[in-house]
Length: 415
Image (cartoon, rainbow, N blue to C red):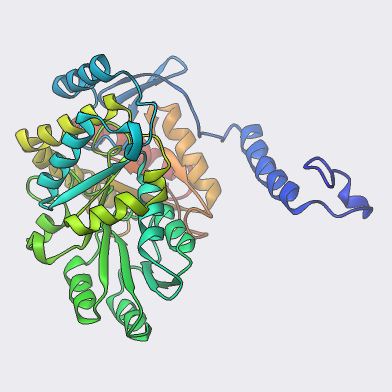
């Protein structure tokens, strides 16, 4: 049997490298190369988080890489709810939800989510990733068709693959492409369309009204991932249906979201009608066979939904910061694609330019990270800068000045 270490001398032609070992070696070589050039910026350990600031290796930097869109981390009500749940139930449950793992707080959180998303019921899982993975796999079978936007999150893609159904991808936010995919699907097959509400790399919003029309025309169920739209879209932060002024009961069949972006906890949720949730609670393997959400996280999440409803001014202020940031970057000459949300791509082009822009920005105490291929298409590498309600206009201006200087230094902008 070939071990992972076998094949170190594969260049001499004596024995080909084990494909698993080769993949490991390729990734490790890429990481080593980045570290040798002092360009490896991932997995940096934060010593402290203070609103829109993060301290790393003793340096306090302005944070532009966090999903804390409404700046809820450390909110007194949320903190108190987490501490109360910890005191009452401890840090974990020693069980899966269907056996010994469900506490009163889990049920109250699910009721709060259902109320917030205006559905009959909801269920929470241990992460947003497994929520997508497990839900899509549970809903579909071999004779069904799942249709996914090409820029959907990896968790959606992985769920589609795990489902073993026919997996079709349509061009990003292209309704003609979506209709062609729906028209080709066998009429007697189960059909599920899955889209992100806000696309996590580009920051743009799905054309939900047209997606709904097409799903109804072709008798397809619609699942929408609101990981980055909860607390962001809509006048009061209730999400994409509110953003477009659509009726809740006539829009989305399966409402998915996370508890780790705007919500400062961990986990994911599905909201929908009672029949759907009953089915999923007994068929989603990631729910049936995974430990329950830690009670402190559930308590924090429940309080967070309450804060969003009690303090709608946070949503309005966030949307003002988003508009200010995008407009300022565009005026400086940056390409920010079609974003209209706190996720703002600053296109650098080549991977090396994105790495260098991020490094130069961090050297000026702006914490931002690069997104490079294959996470995004070759030639579209970028800084993904996330603006929050915690940033003042002065702080946004300072960050834009740093990005502009970095862009000029690496040739993204004319010097």
